[in-house]
Image 1 (tube, rainbow, N blue to C red):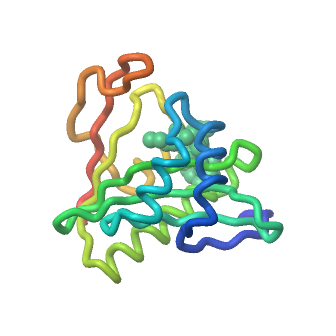
Image 2 (spheres, protein in one colour):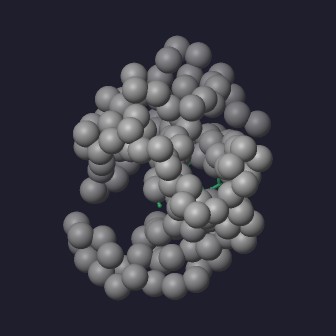
Length: 152
Ligand SMILES: CC(C)(COP(=O)(O)OP(=O)(O)OC[C@H]1O[C@@H](n2cnc3c(N)ncnc32)[C@H](O)[C@@H]1OP(=O)(O)O)[C@@H](O)C(=O)NCCC(=O)NCCS
């Protein structure tokens, strides 16, 4: 059980700046504030959840695009100061539940770096399996992407 007091809610426009700041701490190829603005605020197919501490700090987020009955996970990240506290697991659990109950989304797919052991373990624990590979997918270092799939 987590020792941190936080809640999970739908992302809003006020989260855009903290999301970009968190992304910059979590990824070699982070999304810009403008990218989050487009996706979180304007994209009708996108759905983002954030975990926020009692003090209002952004602890993590996950996003999905819901396209013709499938969920494409765009990203998942947890604040480096609070990892291994079940935050990503809690966000994804709520994301899958909401997509399934409110939007009838069945299968989910995502891309992940083969070197990302933490993310691979997280996704496998939710039943994702490797379904393919995109050669040289990541622009920053030319790393392949594993395509993972989870049946609905
Ligand atoms: C991957 C990431 C989102 C996990 O966030 P987190 O909140 O620390 O994860 P949780 O505490 O919810 O862990 C859930 C499970 O994921 C797996 N996991 C998480 N971190 C792990 C690590 N460092 N090593 C191995 N397994 C790990 C474990 O199975 C864990 O369950 P357990 O703690 O019961 O063993 C986080 O490490 C992160 O933000 N990484 C950088 C961004 C990133 O790579 N995102 C994924 C892009 S595809």
